[in-house]
Image 1 (cartoon, one colour):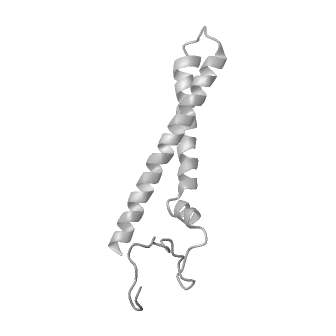
Image 2 (tube, helix red, strand yellow; image 1 turned 120 degrees about the horizontal axis):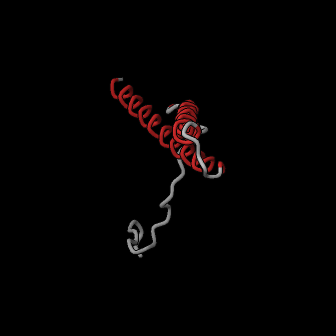
Image 3 (tube, rainbow, N blue to C red; image 1 turned 135 degrees about the horizontal axis):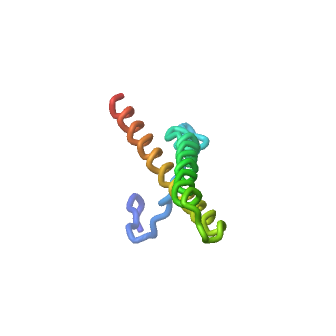
Length: 108
């Protein structure tokens, strides 16, 4: 092999390059992302809404008319309704927060 020429059939080494030390990398990118989207506040609001809604559903459809079925069945259904509705409400509220954050950053 002559000096000044390189082989092109050699395996490519160095595919992964580490970032320079001078580049700014956030310490906790996921935590910053979650904080920017207000996920904690949205979860509190979503699950509070779901508990109120589940209580209303159980009161209207189970307690007021009277039931002959065992109560643990209704408590299980209430648990499933509150967790599913809480997760859905949290997701919707977080998507709204993400949309507003995207609009705000587009305007800047």
